[in-house]
Length: 315
Image 1 (cartoon, rainbow, N blue to C red):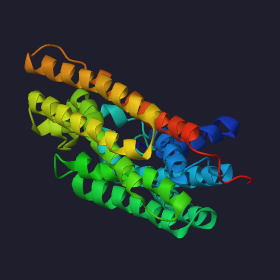
Image 2: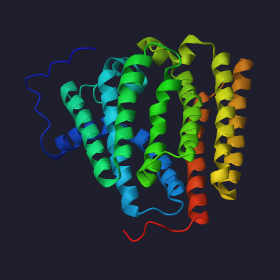
Image 3: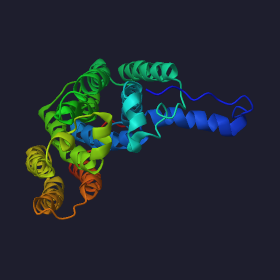
Image 4: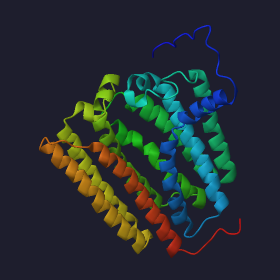
């Protein structure tokens, strides 16, 4: 990692509110809020399905707060480990540690503190199982994905992506105190969604990853092979969503089929364009993948709310 550029003697420190806002913004950026938003979108529907009704709003709120801190911890610690990579890649060069907006030691303490707070919060407000799984997800993301897999194998995101599947299991366990089979199916939906989602992004930023020495699949394989793998995982993902139908109703089933067909069309279009050596836009599939996952889980939430009685009230 490059050394910090010395600050000229006559450069004043950023004072007042503007400086405080900049520092706070840098710490918030360490948690990667946009990624957390998508994780939280999947947590609430999982809780609705687990409750067989509408769970207590306080339980939902406490789970989301704890989940946010856990995800923020994992992301901040990821930024600490990957600071050298982030500084090389254009896509990540504006992250706080890459531009030295936050001292590395402070970021490390911040990430660890968030993890401890997440564990304590979830244990106190939900149950020990949910709290323990949140810590397990943090450790898996940082130690297994970031430190072990990311720089060593092109399958890094396949197995490392399991950490991003944990919010649905945590949400389920916060309600029930155990892990039921629908929670494992929801875990699988996100697990098989992650490779098409991330490989589409990596196709766009292939040169960035190559420059940083990260062996993402698009760096070490041909575009045709990557696009084919995206299609394969997309089919498995869509098929996997249908495994939830026995635990849901017609609203979810209809949306799972329609959204899945919509996603498959774009995945096949990408593969067809790459196979024929025509211009392709993998970022279209990347953005679509976010919309797709949101649509499926919103449909799950609506289905659960319409089909099941209200429980867990009053607060």
